[in-house]
Amino acid sequence: MFTGIITALGTVCEILPLGEGRDMRLVIAAPWQDTGSIAVGASIACSGCCLTAIELKPDSFAVEVSAETLANTTLGRWQPGARVNLERSLRMGDELGGHIVSGHVDGLAEVISQIAENGSIRWRFRVPPELARFIARKGSIAIDGVSLTVNDADQDSFGVNIIPHTAEVTGFSMLKPGDFVNIEIDMLARYVARLADFK
Image (cartoon, rainbow, N blue to C red; front, side, top):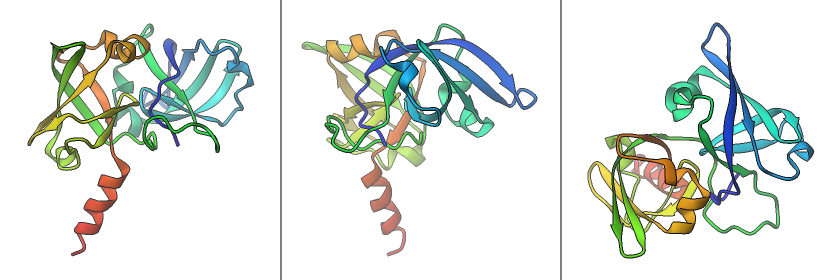
């Protein structure tokens, strides 16, 4: 489990095809001082995707990504040099500064626009109808692993405001209209909708 509070920006430094090119191995450079102390098998959220660390070095870690994950997230589009939002898994007793994030990406959203609004930037994203129904004004959402509050939502899009600090410490500073991001809907919304299906 994660909180959606990004603790570092990593960089994809190596991509190796696996399984006849359907899967892949990623090596991600991380600026954490103690990367080498992370246990093999630990979960790390990489731009919102929960991945298992299979090899650790003092300044990087390696993960393997299945074809299923590549097909349903932005990871299949990554190239060497891509910047990655990183968060290590939540430990009992840690501060829960965002919201409960599982690291299981529900789908992709497209950046529609970014417009200055007072001291922040209003970002708008287009989502598929099957995800839009779970997104509500003042609800929580994870975008590339970043815990955010939804400011408005309609039938196929929603908006969030990003303050300068968040843009500086996450990949938001590199996004532009037409880009795609990983979306994880709020866990509570998912279960409420599932319960409603049984009425």
